[in-house]
Structures are given as structure tokens and as C-alpha cells.
Length: 133
Image 1 (cartoon, rainbow, N blue to C red):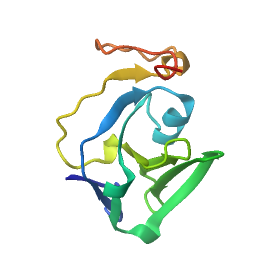
Image 2 (cartoon, rainbow, N blue to C red):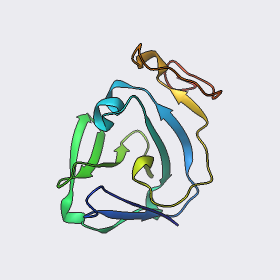
Image 3 (cartoon, helix red, strand yellow):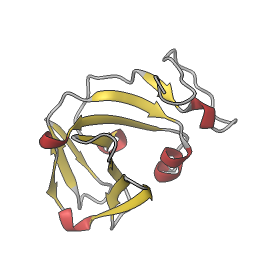
Image 4 (tube, helix red, strand yellow):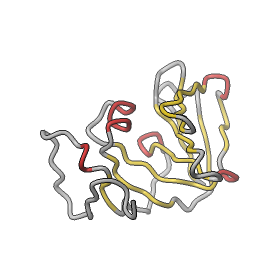
């Protein structure tokens, strides 16, 4: 079981693994939403995901048609996102996961959008956008 929570502890969630499509995303939207130079995200199957505490605190923002980001309305922690183009999938913001994970990112994506001051120092593959796009 994968467990996660926000900074203030008001929202908790759980999902069954495995995680899939784990990547370090350098797109402008992930950087703005996280306040960091990249965000590490991974997906779980929608049917295994549920908010276990603080559902009333969960707020959402449609950053483009069919794409919603969910966050804690009290502390602002980004928690997960959903894309209409990926039905049946929830994309977790791995900085909010409390469980020790064994999976590792497969790549850096959207490196074409990373800031010039940000250096990638690992050996993961790098993609200008999403692989296969």
C-alpha cells in the first residue's frame, strides 16, 4: 500500500501499487505547481486510489482543459493530478508519499523546458518532451 499526506497532515491518501511511469518532470506546469526545479511523479490505477482523510480540504485547479491538479486547500501541498487523456489513472506527486518506495524514475521528461540554471547530474535518460510524442 502506498500512503501519502500533505504538509499540514489534513489530507491523507492511499493507493495500491505498483507505481508506473515514474519520471522527473521539468515542464513549466510541474515546476510552477511544485515550486521546485522539477517534480517527480508516478501513476497508480484510479480504482486503487482514495483520499482517506480531509477530502473536504482537497481543492483542484484546471490548468488546461481536461487536466486537473489537486492540492490541500489549507497548506497548499500539491497531491495528485488527473488527465482526461489518461482515464483510469491518477498521477501522484511523489514528494507527498510517506511510504518508502522501491520503484525508481525511468527518465527526465520535458527537459526542453528546464531552466538553464538547473543541471541534471544523474544517468537517467532525458527526453525533450514525453517519450513517444
